[in-house]
Length: 95
Image 1 (cartoon, rainbow, N blue to C red):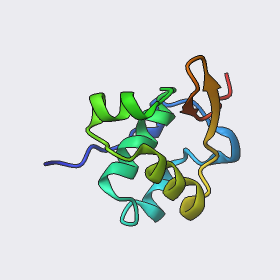
Image 2 (cartoon, rainbow, N blue to C red):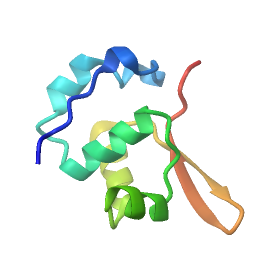
Image 3 (cartoon, rainbow, N blue to C red):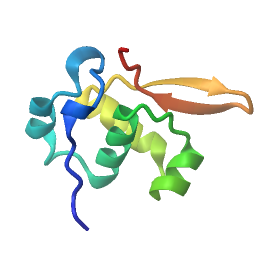
């Protein structure tokens, strides 16, 4: 499976400048494949739930990947409860 390259020039600027190419290049070897998939989806503005992550990306433990991204790489991932009492994870993107 080929790794997908991120073109940060086409993405929106994210708070705390986490989405710049330099940050990614410094840390890309540390990102697991699943963390990278989650990170890219969030940077595209997707709002992920555990169900969406499982169905769309085959990620069985989204909460663990979110924790990895937050704890290890300080990615500013936020969440909110939705009707039905489930969490939706996202990154606030500056418009």
